[in-house]
Length: 184
Length: 196
Image (cartoon, rainbow over all chains, first blue to last red; front, side):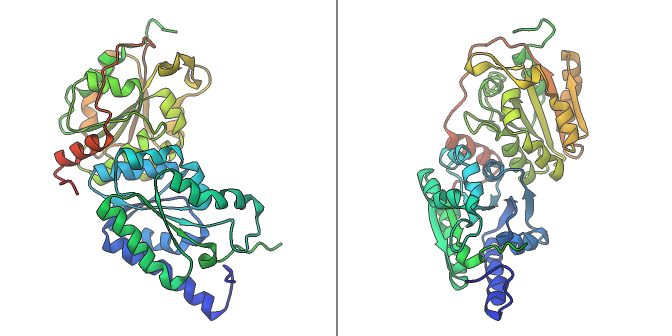
């Protein structure tokens, strides 16, 4: 099992490469607005976005703000992507309506908690419900669990979101990002 | 309850939008959307019928995408209270072209007139200032509104926040389009973007 403070070469390689794969896919699809509520699993990608002049990183107070922001961005001619962790999906439920009402190209990348070696029981209820909540809201769910598949899964998600206006969530498994390690 | 010195909402919105030019105007769900429709349908009107709490964020998304155009969001006190965190998000992004107008009747008019927090304990102008929007003010007269309206065209001096106390009379609904796909496609078309 990978852990976020793992020092093995394998874990270090995995941490280094897949966020960069996501970043290059977002660049290729001309993503311009990147709202987020931070998650440790997204930290490397957020750093890349903050350093990229063509992208506007927009820190949020709650994840539902990001749905509304992206609807406005699309009306104004820009694509975006919402970065959040699985608990944030629960904060978005009513605002997900906008994805169907406006039929805009909605893409979110969700880092998973509450699965695969979770330490914190508070993460488990929402983590267990995340995929179901998204599907009930009419959002297609894809998942990547290994670093080597992240690029193609995010490419597929971005393709169907931006080309077919099919609202899509890509879940990034805790197995991929590593269970958070709590130490005293 | 209606307070005698509070302004009439349709006159307020008409005065604000009279010289709107190329402004994109977002209306929060409920009466604010009807007010904007009553002031005259427009290709750049972004009517909302749901997504309560999201009006300011939708306007921010448009404002960041179109920094050379004025973006005005007109919403109610209840809708603003539900999205109060978005004022912190706007205060961080500081979009120069965004104006936030709250039509504050101190009640939830669409649902029977239940009291909102703004009539008792919550000062939205103070909230906006504390969130990093220093140009935040309340406006109480039609003369002030007419004097303020042209400043919404300045796309470099925002964000601005204005609270306007309005009376709580329920006016006849002026029904805007409620087809979200049409509304967004029409705005995109007016801005020169083709359908997918």
